[in-house]
Image 1: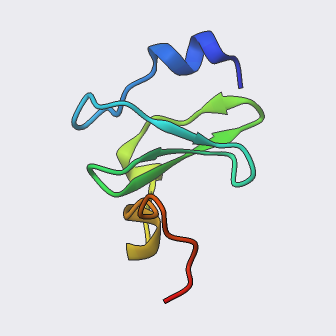
Image 2: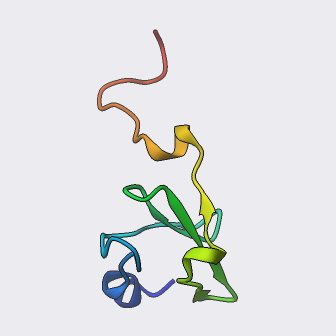
Image 3: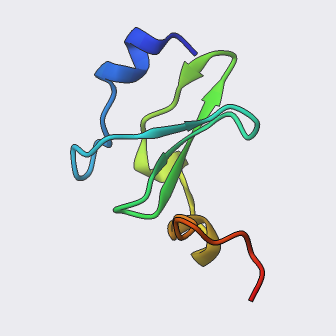
Length: 69
């Protein structure tokens, strides 16, 4: 996805920044807990087309932690 386009896109609900997940081809809004699909390089910015993020996707990893407890 083009970095300039990504910089201009915001969540249609909260107007917050989106994070691009290249592997999943999704734009993530952690505030609303939604993942907007990117189909054939085109972001689909419709809330009804977005999927709900799972709880582990909503929370960013803690700094300095590597999963060992």
